[in-house]
Length: 262
Image: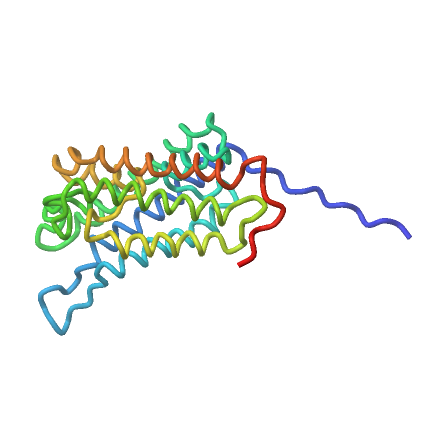
């Protein structure tokens, strides 16, 4: 009996394909999140019975759904980062090459900027100076003080961005682990981001993603641009701490033969 011919494994995605996938995934995430915040979150507000706005819950779900879809669509090509903090956290954990970080971050920032630029073009056709009002309100930018939905200060924003990005990266690193991960990683990541947004949108409109913050700040006015540094520095700080800590705690050379019994 002749042996059946073997099928060659599919070729690994090229660097160009990975970068395009990161840009498209970030575009999907930012356009869904900010589009929901601008167009749907308060739709019908002030008309009581006819209020059809999705509110903070809708924004949180939009983030989670976008990440789930993007992870399964583009993750096989690029790993599905869609976030500079994720890329840096993975590099710190030894799961992504440092030499590829700059290109990934550039692709993510470009994808986010394309998303908000397209949303600006949509807003141009809005009624009653829609775009002007959206830009005056900050264009869904992250921030504290006047840009915080509930009026929180800079201290709250710093703690939220550091802590929740750290927690997000810990989940991301766990569910995507090469030996301990799960095929449902995309779902777990999306649900984690939904939970994070449900908890923190009132504080600073939730970033945990510098690409998302940059994309909105460029259209959000001088206050948003002046506060942008917090939403670059502290998500990255939280992600790097998570990456180095995860590698030291869970991926060291000395590991127990089996987890302790519960």
